[in-house]
Length: 108
Length: 121
Image (cartoon, rainbow over all chains, first blue to last red; front, top):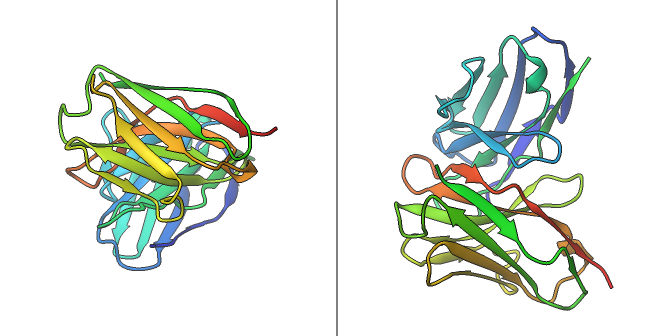
């Protein structure tokens, strides 16, 4: 199975900050990388697919980049509703399509 | 707009079979090319991909669970189910159903709200 390593596991930030979360794959996965946001007690929500394509309805403050084994999710001008846990997921070739361990974005 | 809703017992005894159903509103298993997927989340832990049934009826399971998992579709095509046999406390988790796109990058674009299943005697 492909292993996904996310870092940091948590970070503290303030409203208006720009934060970056990194996800590394144990082998090249092209652009088969998706990002999800999960708030406490809720289901994950798709933010970005294909490493960089914003899902419909997701605010433009979210952006993704990368290919191969290294990917980033950037949240610009952090809003109060953006404090949540973020997961990357690879969906390359055959399942299981594994998730990263998550990054919790907390208020400073 | 597709909506998904999980249902099933919240408490299962060890060694028994966990059974959950996901009801699809605004769509069906064969409407469009999707993977109808189960994912679980252990308490305070990350997400684990369990398996799927596709629009064509094919199934694929996580090798770590393959010997105990069955995912099936209902003849109405508006429900699909998850069964995990011989459960232990390690199967205690919130279980989500989701829809994965077969085109693009197989992202899970719709999720149910999740249902907590506790394995305990």
